[in-house]
Picture 1 (cartoon, rainbow, N blue to C red):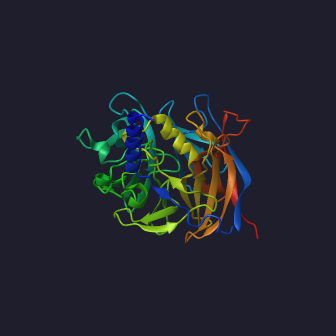
Picture 2: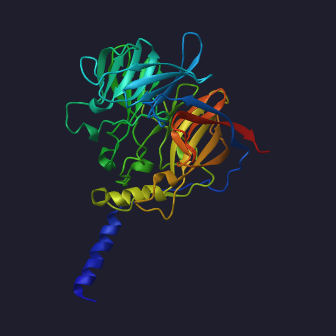
Picture 3: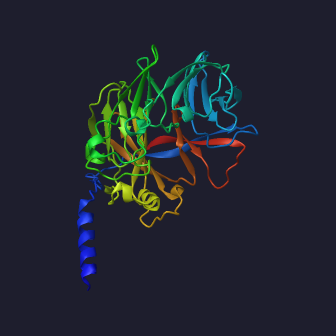
Length: 391
């Protein structure tokens, strides 16, 4: 072996020691006992017009002045919010927003309907909240970024969805954002991913940091998917956060930075590891393959009708490569009681069958958008899951 080869091995060994890999161990793997499961007990099909497709990027359930439950969703093709009666699935109307002029909203990417005169819309290109009404009139704007060109280093960006909605709590709107890159250890306590808007004066404050035991020590969670944060609103008004690499859940108030940590993992989830390479030297292909190979948690939802929590787990594919479709990851739904005690879990299939980002809860059960092999694009279809005892 040449002197150069010895030198190269020595350099590689030193550099490999400088990479810090976070290992998040599932301490209760294989020790949990299931007493419940989820079973399909119904279906809802909403007929779509010719310019509306399945997989809407955002939904909100609301109750109108007559007490009817309405399913609303965003149609990005024509910049509209559609309204349907959830019970009989009939179309009601839609609100059109313009892309030009004084009332322009370039790209709605989420919204919160407080009432028909106060609709808060997230305008993604401008990173702002637009206050509008059901006539499409813009009545105000709230910026969610600063004039500093480096604001993404310490302020969140947002990928809102049905399972990452805008919440209203104590006259405040709560938007859960994220960082799209690994945060250096020295900046971890400076980056806050939650925006809190006082709707009485439009003042914005930022709260909630990434937990150091998962995201600290210069760990590499590049790619945006492992740094996505999923919120749920508990019955007492606390926020419950699900971080993809953590078997735990983190509970906090909307306006503090203190967490209470509880176990909220799967009986079958494995140890989750960050990428063993410095972020600046990590190729996109490795980032994607790493995410596909790892178990990663996702949305957490509270079911007020049954007083339980659901948490999604996207199982890892050990042999996955950069070209493996992320829809091949199996989807497991973990069930917990109101105190986060484990009740069971159900494997519902893969992302080829289910658009789990469009999940919401009604009195009927857990609604998840269904794709399936026989997808009819004339309809927006949901399968409804109910809780079943297996004792």
